[in-house]
Length: 276
Image (cartoon, rainbow, N blue to C red; front, side, top):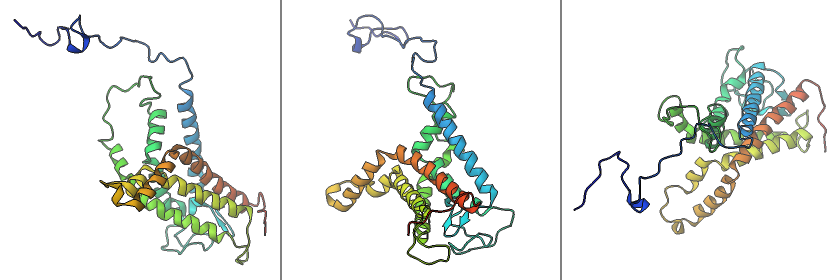
């Protein structure tokens, strides 16, 4: 005769050979048993992101020292209002004088990085402690994922990705314009030219290594053998994607450095070395 034990009685389970009750999870009161400095990486992430946000916010609202012929800060490009300094991009409208031109355009790069898969992991773990590190309990009792506002807006990442590509084209155009001198004559190159070229290249690497880019290139294909060109592109993007975290950080500091370099030139703090 076979009997079935009621639920919750701790009856034997087939996975344990029918001997004794199934083991339960260990009752560990400590937040973690890790003895290494697991808190260091979240702390460094907080400091780095706060520093960048603070600097970029100050520069965006400063509304000055962002143009030094022939260079323009990436924080202010494309400069699309009639109040912009220089003539690096067509002026599309006249905005209020008290609104910085950077405010109109920083929404796209900010939205792209804010919804980026890597940056989500970075600030979820560092600012929200969800979770702060592997094998470390998080302080939150509930987990709703990205199914509610404001995190529901993370689904806009792919659209910010497409818009971000347009911005990369503009910043590349700015780097090309940097092969001029103060009079507008072509065939010259200074240190600022290299700075803007490096910034544009790093932003392209960050964008092309994005998870959304990988999906756009090779997603929704049932047979790669029927799409050899897309397979090659997907393979290349996949290699870049493996270093997406590194490109995210390097490009972040790269765009800040490019702005700071233009700031130093615009304020007359330094002069731009010319190579030819």
